[in-house]
Structure formats: C-alpha cells, structure tokens
Length: 65
Image (cartoon, rainbow, N blue to C red; front, side, top):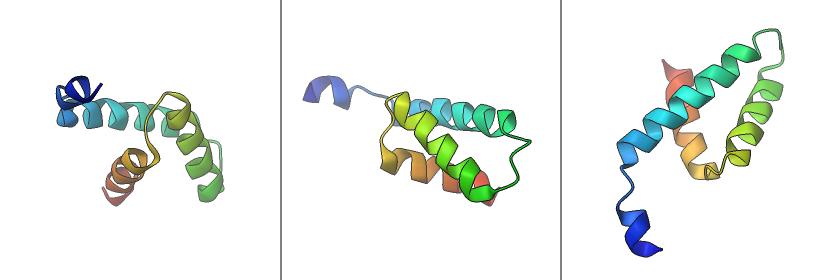
C-alpha cells in the first residue's frame, strides 16, 4: 500500500480534485447559503474517496481565486 501511495502524482490528484470541486460548485449555483455549498461539496468529495485535508487545501485555493 505504501509503495502505491508513493507513486501517486500529487499535483495531478489535486488538479483532478479541483476540477471535481469546481464542477460540483457550479451545479450548486442556485444555493444561496455559502456554508451549505461548502458542506455539500465536502460531502461529495469525501464520498469520492478524497481526504478531508486534501479537500480543504483545494477548496481554499479555489475560493481564494
């Protein structure tokens, strides 16, 4: 397991997560509560197997831009 995890391209994984989050945020454009959007996006990404820490990093970068 450790050797497989070492082979993961971190930058590529973050790019994929970023794309996934942006897509989900776009689909929630009718939602007016920013905390509800955040919760739904986090639940969605965690359901896809991403770690909470990875989601926080990418989400914060998206929201800063």
